[in-house]
Image (tube, rainbow, N blue to C red):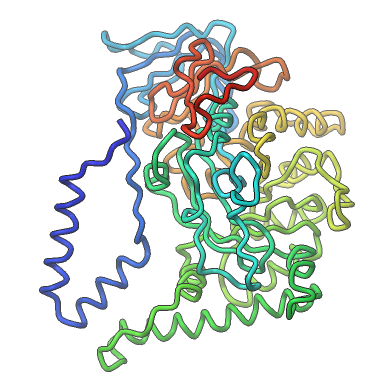
Length: 465
């Protein structure tokens, strides 16, 4: 089910080497230029499943609509049909959803599972390359440990996809990777096939605290100078390759630089910026830097003061990934409010509820419920159907995968969760989780639960191994 097709892999390698040996020096360089954008391609394969129809269920489609007593047909890995009176194939497995709710699978766009794996020991701390403030050359996927039991815990909470990010010690922390939340042997088996790469950046206290006595930056103004210097170098690198590809060089390809290659990928629009940033003033400054160097910030993460500049976030098409109620644990988090998420949503900006936590990722539906209810108490009238966008459609947009997942729409990946009741209730649990139309978690069948090899023989309360 998860094994690679070895003959196909070997054939691919043989064909690639034959092609390269037959190329001229110039053609070889062009082949390198093509391959460098995706040198570790996804080997994810969906699990085959018979058609499944879920009936008599309350549907939140993830884009603002609610359907009572609806039906959804999952077929060939896709959402084949949904609504009322869905035609059912004779070979379909029927699941009665009476009293239950169906939503798109939760997408956590800020996780460190696999790079800060459980158990939390120093040997598992592989998310922060704290050897310099600019480490854009490192890739989170090369630290990702598929045996992290946190993936199975997140699956039981309805998480079907997630972005694994480097930590926030550096101005540029490295590339992120988006994965499908299926038990796998390798990170490439987990990689979301169509997802673009992201880059982790960080502003504020973290970089200046880590590097203040190690050569800098030690101030916020030095943080900004560090970003600008790196972007200037990336522009020069980008131009060197552009000149070469236009034939302006002598035919010899420029030397590759992994750090500048990633930064140039951002400037080219191929890599999405995910920026750890708390304070409103710093987010505004970073959008100024964004305009200076003509790139796009995809999402500010944590963003506890996003409510202060929600209109500017909307104007600049920048998402905010936020906690429901974390605040005050350091100075830049001091001015957080519980109404942050609904206020950003109300301003027409892209609001997201994220975890940044191996425990919180198991209950993201409850985190969204807290933010929604805080908004209601403050007089911000947002429906549950609209609020579910914070967990599926908006994070999918922030990761560049919304055309594939994040909502219940015909033709999209059948990544859905059947809940025991209203998912905005703290009493509700994810009963069944489907990824690409296959049921990969069934709360009623403990023998079907994924088990990390690392945990075999170590039975904790509530586990089944």
